[in-house]
Amino acid sequence: MKKIAIVYHSGYGHTKKAAEAVHAGAAVADAAAELIEIDAEGNITEANWASLAAADAIIFGSPTYMGTVSWQFKKFADTSSKPWYSQVWKDKIAAAFTNSATMNGDKLSTLHYLFTLSQQHSMIWVGTGLMPANSKAAQRNDINYVGSFSGLMTQSPSDSSPEEGPLPGDLETAKLFGKRVAETAAKFA
Image (tube, rainbow, N blue to C red; front, side, top):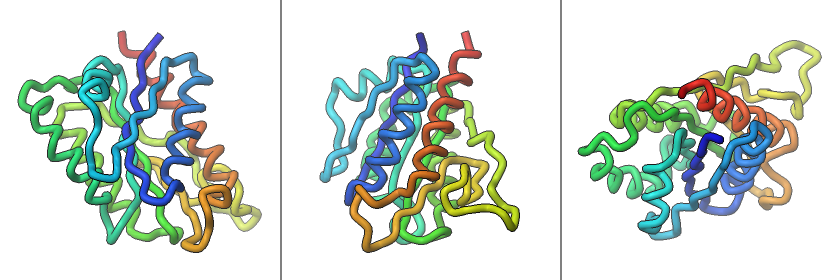
């Protein structure tokens, strides 16, 4: 059974909800998935760092704030220089997700940041593997309605509570994404 670590920061609870859906998808793929929440001060515990070192795959998650990751996630990323120096995460599977209030909201900039972080750690990147819902018949709750290939993008209206957003289609997309990452990790012995 592969170990999947989902390390994320959530400012208001929307990204946490997406992380939980990614976690559920990884569990469907018979993986041992663990949620690691970066706290309000940008920290995780020593036990969390050990879990990341032991994981077969690490999925990064952050809200998109002002076109990139939250400062809390950035602090975590900067702190990852110790495992970087020893290449502890080398050849692990990597993937990422983000949430913002608008359909675009410069989420791709956040995914590019997370991709760069993974490549600095010499990881192997996995995208969504999902076709976009881009026909005239497409509905907002279709799979991959936001239309991202490089990582999971979810959207929560700025005045929504975490119970209201991300929307069901985005959460189902998150589950499929978590499943894909876990299945990809299982292909690497």
